[in-house]
Image 1 (tube, rainbow, N blue to C red):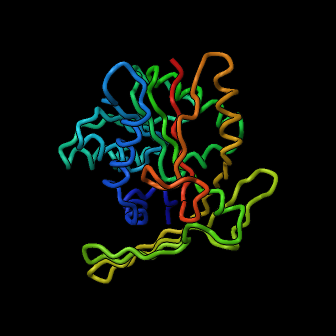
Image 2 (cartoon, rainbow, N blue to C red):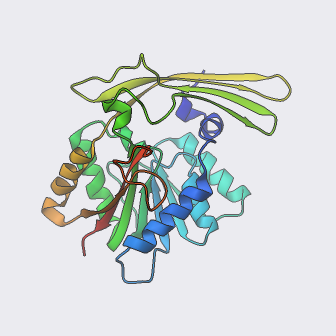
Image 3 (tube, rainbow, N blue to C red):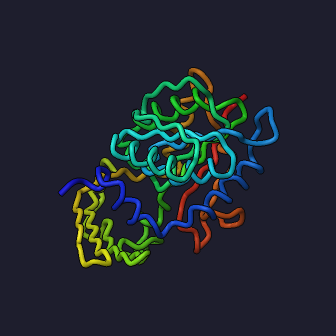
Length: 267
C-alpha cells in the first residue's frame, strides 16, 4: 500500500466533493475586487502544493496562463497528464513550496485545500511567504485557503472527517482524520489517520491507508509570518478574509467553514 500523496487517482477521487468551477468563480471574483496590478486583472496563476492541480487546470480552461508546483513527483506527472488529456496548457514544476525559483512572476498565486498545513514551523511559513512574494507582481494577489479555526478550537467542527463519493459506477469511502487524532498542543501538529477504500463497478477494491501530519495555523500566526517575511524585502498585506467561497460569508459567521486569506503584494 502506498501513501495517499503517491496515489493521485485516489487522492483526486477523495477530494471530488469539492466544486472546483464554483471555487474558481470565487477566486476570479476576489481577484477582480482586490487585484492592484498594472493591468485590468490577473492573466497568470501559480498554484502551490497543487497536487492534481484542479484549480490551476480550471483557471487554465478559463484563459489564464497556469503553472502548478508540487513536491511530489507522482502528483506532478498526474497533473501534467490530465492537462494534456483535456487539451490545456499547464506548466508543472516539481519543487518545495518553502524555497523555489521560477523564471516568471505571476498576477495570482493560490494554495488550496489547506495545503499550507504542510508548513510545520514558523520558519517554514516565513520562507514560504518570502518565496511566493518574489514570484507575485506588485499589486498581485496570494489567496490561501486554510482550515477554519473552529475545527480545532471549538467542540463543533465545521467540516466532516468522513464522506462517501459516488461517480461513474465507483464508490469511495473516505475517512480523513477523526476525534482520536489529537492535536499536539505545543507544535499544533496533528497526525491524521487517512483511509480511502474504492469499489469499482467490476467489484475491484483498492485501499490506501496513511498517516498525514498537518499543522494548524491561526490567522494571527499567519499575520505575524507575513510581517516577518516582509521585514527585509517587502511582501504581502492582508486585503480581505472570507469564510466560504463567496463574497459575503465572514470568517466569524456561524456558517463559515474555511479561513481564506487574500494577500496583496506590496507595490
